[in-house]
Length: 153
Image 1 (cartoon, helix red, strand yellow):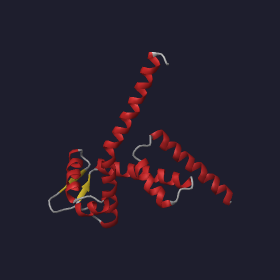
Image 2: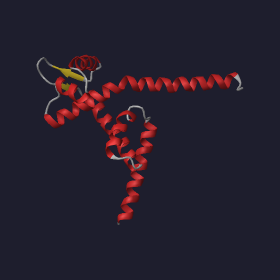
Image 3: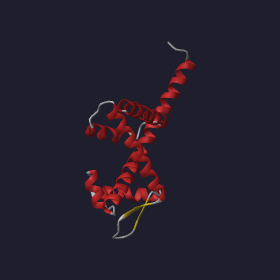
Image 4: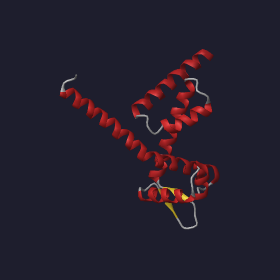
């Protein structure tokens, strides 16, 4: 059996990991929404509640409730009978979320995962991967890209 101090340290580290996962869960919905809002605005010029509901597979009421929370958090603005707009903070979060998703997706594909599965898996992983791990993924991708480029030359 480990000494009490070792056990307390192990419990502290476990609690830190648990808190990190809970924090990721709390931001996951906001990240998914702002990322989709940005995508819809880029592709169609607007993001409407009905479109978000279709793309997310939820009800209009669920989207409305989430949009109200995103407004309180300063990520979106809305006007009656108009589209949903991202604030500067919302745009920044959308760009950051898209970048995280793309790095994770590309990393999975570099490991041999097919594109569709990589996209699906990246959707969950992107919210939980640490910045250090994400940097390692990007470094690996850059290194493997350089290696592939040298082989083609």
